[in-house]
Amino acid sequence: MPVSQKLQQISPVDIRANPENPRLVFRHGEMENLMVSIAKHGVQVPITIYREGKHYRLLDGERRWRCARKLNLPLIPALVQAKPTELQNLLLMYNIHALREQWDYFTIASKLRRIIDLFTTEQGRAPNEVELSEATGLTRGQIRRCRLLLDLPERFTELLLAELELPKPRQKLSEDLFIEMERALKAVSRRMPSYRPRLDGIRDTLIDKYRAGTIASITDFRQLAKIATATDKEAVTTKEAQRALDRVFDPRSNEGIREAYESTVEFMYDEQKAARQVTVLVEYINGVIETDSANELDAEFLEELRNLMRALRKLLASDR
Amino acid sequence: MNSGLATGDALLIDGAKGFFDSQFADPAVHTNEAIDDRLLWTPSMYFRATHHLVVAAEVSETPYPAILRLRHAEVMAFQEPIAVYCVCPEDVYLRKESQPDVRLLRAHGYGLITVDAEGNATKRHGCIPLIQFITDTDFQQQIDGLPKKWRARLSESYEKYLVNAVSGVQDVSEVLEGLALSAAKGAARKRWATASLASQGLADMLDGLSGIPECKSARAAIGGVRSYVKQYRNPSHHYPRNKKEAVKKYRGAQHGFRDGIRQIHSFRAAMAGIGLNLSL
Image (cartoon, rainbow over all chains, first blue to last red; front, side):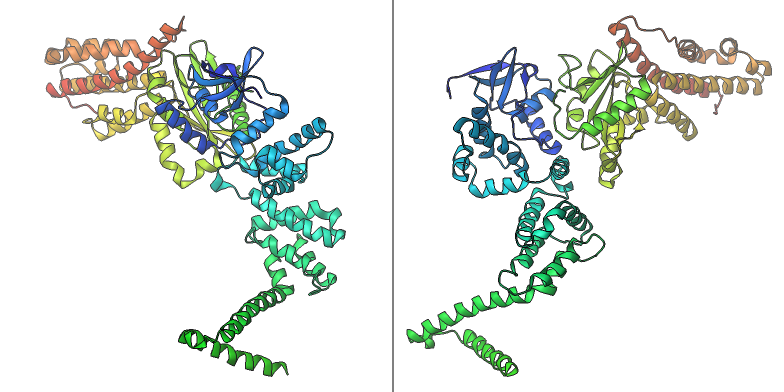
């Protein structure tokens, strides 16, 4: 990529937005704040553009450029550089923007597919996650989250985009909601393929229940996945899990994820958690005994251990 | 389409376009284009309602967008009449916390159009070109000292003025006519003139008043009313031939409104000076 750049003063009217800019959403409140700052102090950091025919094309600085246009500024400082290839253009966008500021995942995801296509054309094979991560500067976790959004059917991406246009406080359906939901649905449909043909309807129901407050939090979707994965551990039968999930996926039922989780697998997961804690405690106690340091234990801790012993006796007696 | 400040404003722009289409018979709307290089604001849309009047609109998530606050003085001083609307979502407008901004927007002379979720636009309040605008504070200062009933009547004129400046000025001249009639009736009651004075045409009535010896010290004020009513009672609707004439005409309306209130003060004082208490 050529690096020679020239600082010039360019009329914002002669500059065009870059259609490859993965940033799709420019929120009103955030833009107004920047515009007021530019009105007071001017554009402090030059935008980056390249020449394209009679006009210039933006590489970096769409927010500043939009503000300059709104303020009808006659000129804006700009670094003019050589025209990049399409893949260079896209990768440059990622490396300029995504690493510097907090982008919406949808923003990142929207152009990731194009990068994969261009990479595939250039290299004759699709990039793996590591290559994609190196090229874009995104972490592999970010790429995985983006892919969940990429796989969404179009009408849901449109729904999400419309929501992202709203100011943050007014957004009800966040990207995190879709990411958590898709992750959970993947876990469910992997174990229970019978749900696959119904996924769109299930998404609608889950979104409606979330909007209505029947699903109280986006983290509840993790419990949905837990219900499905509990069948791996044979803690519940597939039938039992399916019955619980059916109630959640039924638009006519008022059952949320939390209720379904509590009535099926919560006890098992709590038991597993307690078992892990018991293992840690037993290891600790054995360590104290082995090092002969019981006399160093705090009186309060010893009292807690006595309480534990009493509780254990009661529990184990009732177990007989 | 050119880019605006933010994304997601298509519904607002379409709603406002629909509104302007119905109100101004399909004007040629420019979207996100500057009106003039010298005006440091690119409105979301504008059109020329006539060759001398620009109607502009700024779409926004808030009832009073920052750019309109920033550029208020510039638009007021700009040498071309521009009427400006803010276009915001209806649900934002209906919120309690938006009301201070809505009031301020109106007080600063901007109109407001709201667009509901289905894209239907509603005009919440109109506006006149900012070049004609008189602030509420300014108006209240001007009518200070007048009787309560007069202030209420002039507030109606001001409301009219804010929607249609020429009508507002005409309305002030009607108030002056009413006061002249009250003066003529008062003069007749004091037997300075015959009762027929009050039934004459306005010009003759004022000339008659001016000729009464007891009104000698009030002749200047009576003459002022006569020339004011002559000029503004039936204001000529001459079509301005160019921008310069348009600016003059639109500024003239503001001058006429202010001058009318000054005439009311001076006529009232002059009449009180000769013992005539006027009523509306």
